[in-house]
Image (cartoon, rainbow, N blue to C red; front, side, top):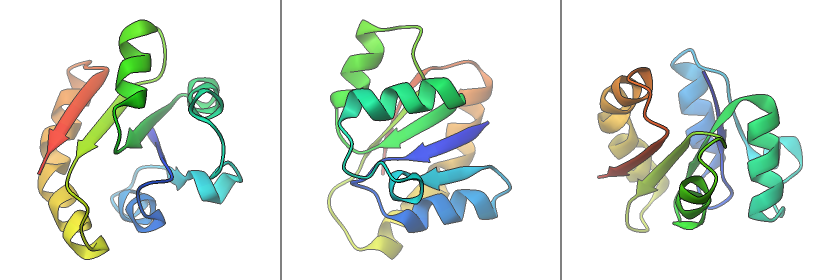
Length: 110
């Protein structure tokens, strides 16, 4: 299980996920921070990565293309990085359970 964190979320989120023992990178780490959603989608699909993002675009793509990458849609208000990381850490066990159950579009609210 590896993760690709989209541009509207901080690179620190990818580092936090890596610290939990899961491969993760931010789109900026691989040179696609300014890429359009279809390019990020294709990259995640090719690499077998789970996209973590904060907007509805990838969720819509996932419903249209059910064979695409798994999407984690993080529904949080704009906030400071540490607040976001703390909220994500609280949701992490639930998210892993849902991934292990085979869910492919997971909406998380903090």
